[in-house]
Image 1 (cartoon, rainbow over the protein chains, first blue to last red):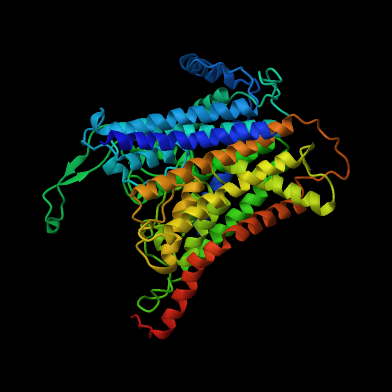
Image 2 (spheres, chains in turn green, red; image 1 turned 90 degrees about the vertical axis):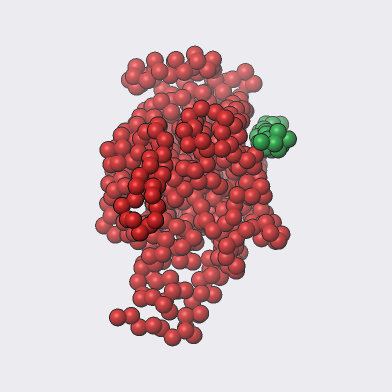
Length: 31
Length: 580
């Protein structure tokens, strides 16, 4: 298993949840 | 057809008491059930170090939901990535590649269960139990919890515990308490009963490795054959009851080991539908009874229309085959043990409910028959996934309230709370997220050479790609199949659709519910719009159909509709072969 690719998958997964968290924060601020 | 009607009648009959039970078990009010389940729940709260009585407003509720799902997703990713070196792997199954592990983790943490692998060959028992079955139990509870919070918000906030949280937001309940109750009081007891019934019917339920058998038919030339088994029955039980989908075996419930008898087929079809239907009754009990009746009538009407469409389409001959075969049902890809109609019914129920487990090859449905599961996923609210189906329905109800308000010149309101600009903006996000997540990657996959990996040219290939992204964004998980979808492009792009398609349509309505909870109830007058009348129900149906067609008709035209019209004339120039 390539550690760099495993890390890339981790970054994508965390990034997608981060995008959802950003939406939550944005919705909280806009309202 | 008798089997179809029996399945639907039994499901509706069971859903009525189950809906009442769901309300009693999950509403948060004190009931006798606390005595039975309280000790188990308190042990879990202590184990995880959470306070089930802490009030949560919409922001705290949404943050807790995202944080716990991220933790579950990371744990599943690690298990899939390392399963080759971990225990409970008697068949020495290797670890997954990074992109397949990413897609599989995203797929199961979003209650989708889209599979770009074959379960029996690429998952160890630890991967199946810790990575898959655990998420199959927890993720439907997450959807149910989100619905409970939204319903409380629509009705003015939680009626138990402190009124506001630390941020000052009106309490919508407690996320951890809602998820725990859904798991302990609903999903685990139901899945245990169904797993025992399926084991009785012959579905494997063991931790032993693959069984080695010697084929009776010597003509096969095989000295021995390895038959993969495992704890299949518990997995099948929760995958059906939790609108999870997927399967222990790649071809899901068309494998006799996963679905051995007509009774196991009937039990699984009821299990696919019963909880989503019960949630409609639960919603009525938590809001207004007549609202629940309206929702049931709307969903049942559309569900029956979709079932009729796919059954009629599959009873006809495939137009591409009429030159070489006798007219009659389209048997290609069907589960021949159970027949064309039950296979067609399964195809539409599994896509109406966001389940996604299959019992026939959707790629082999007639062009118009194949459009039906696609439409079920595009609408994604009849009956939809556990909790999230009703959330999607509520989004359409709020749009209907807004449109109806515009038509009659009154401020739109629901459950005595007025909708304003902020709420409509958030509803627009929830409405627009799925089409963006479906249509943009479909266009990219089809527009860039070498990405799609379809096995068919022309309209059928377009349907294959559109179906895959629709299945991901709608968190359905069923496969049309015929795609080379084990590539980094497919795994990563589908993972994006899976996660954003799951959480944006949950978070936006949660924010709307939080905002509505903070509003003073408007006095009910004779001119107030009733969200439980027959005209309102008809308007909801019209809004759902028009919005879906406006958004997706171009895609449906290029895919299944074009295939239907292209394949039909071809037979007119080929002389028919007479059959004896």
